[in-house]
Length: 491
Image 1 (tube, rainbow, N blue to C red):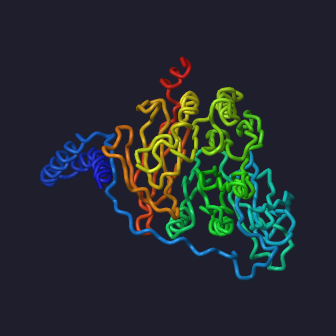
Image 2 (cartoon, one colour):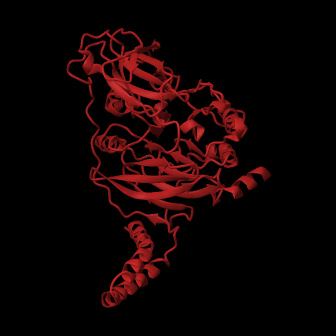
Image 3 (cartoon, rainbow, N blue to C red):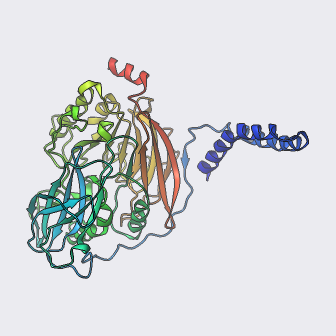
């Protein structure tokens, strides 16, 4: 309520000049009475302006009761057979290709037929098929194929596994829209998604948004060793994940190690959600990233290289001498060596365990990773860092080494997608000075990179199934800030 009051007062401040102009255009008698009202409004506005713009807010909103885990979805449709593609999702591979991933219960070709007109598929790509076993569980056939080159901002119609199934082809046609090659670019950011009633609410709100790509900072299915939950999660998100690229990183619920029985971590995650960790594209081509060699961390570009996104692994080695730390150092250093000096306008990073957190839940769990990597992100002028893990929302100021710094990233915790463990509703009191807004509610975020200097971040609360903008802020590009670039050269 307080944050809403402040925003309303600021809107009134902006409206005052317009009201003055309107008064001046009226007759003298009417204008006199209107002017009296205007003076009263102005007094209220000036009084409200005494409130500091960076006033920290702990929202008093009370979340409705938790919702149950959704029943396991057995099939996508009643006419499905063993060769019917299911759990379809896509991800970007370089600037102009898309990886299509899907599962069939029985053997089927790993082919994707596609084109720009419904029912017509002049192009085709063939990929790979794998399976995995976990204790007594045996997965279906996991297929993936890379399609492209593709045109930006274009709708493609496609079908997986071609003519293998006996179901009508029209029931198997899907479509996706490729992201734009220039700004503006619209992200959806949501963490700790799970598969509950609140997850369904979040997905409904995401589906209603006009966005280009979804970023997920870990904790996808909450399978927690029960592998059939990976299948039900894949079916739950398929309507959205098959239509826009989903770029994900892992969380603690993806580890799924079992002593002696399943000693290898991330078995299901790596098999089902393959990301472009091995893609090498010349930075001069506008999509760059240094290949990491590990599906648990990677990076990529969007909007023709205007935005660089770094996906980090909170649950694989990140300490001194680790492969991840060496890769991160190389990836960020390459940003300043791009052909023609075309450094990205915005650099974003995603982790699972937050590096800054004033919630009582998961206190300190991201500190070791922060100690290892924060200086690299600060030196590269990363604009924002998004995290999950804590089942609540919180936005921090630009922070480095625990203190406000105008050349540091904005930190956002958004682990509130709808998980089955419930919300983390206990915060440290008093609210730290570096924390701007915090609230324990389910929801999702949207980041619109409007141009090379400004991006708009909004957090949408799931308010009794209605999306409500509860927090928003403009984020200015650090690459466009001369003071930050001068101080960077001195580091």
